[in-house]
Length: 155
Figure (cartoon, rainbow, N blue to C red):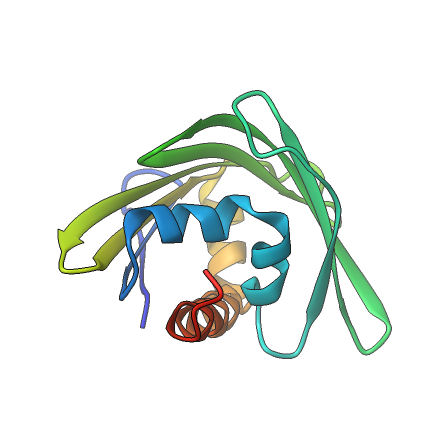
């Protein structure tokens, strides 16, 4: 399970999850568009990449669908490094709600990695709306799919 915590002093969400995967595998799963769409989000959706340029200065967009409804997301990669990714994230249904996300991998040894994610939004109301949106289900189901991809040798 993913630990999801709201910072009491900042409009920030912190998430932590351990994987039986190397740091390189975890980062690849976040930067390779073909892998990303196989695990991102809850089990009830499917996703496709519109564009994806996973490099410092690149940008991305993907569309998820469920029961005929589509949900699009886009952002920019501000930094893609061997141990972290800094990017923006926008749900196009709420274009004013841009978050700044930092993903950092921590090598725990023995083929295990701890992923640290923080998402900074512009207000406490925005942060709380994210937390109440069902993001916990999407994060946990998505990372469980990633666990299976790693276990099956796809990452």
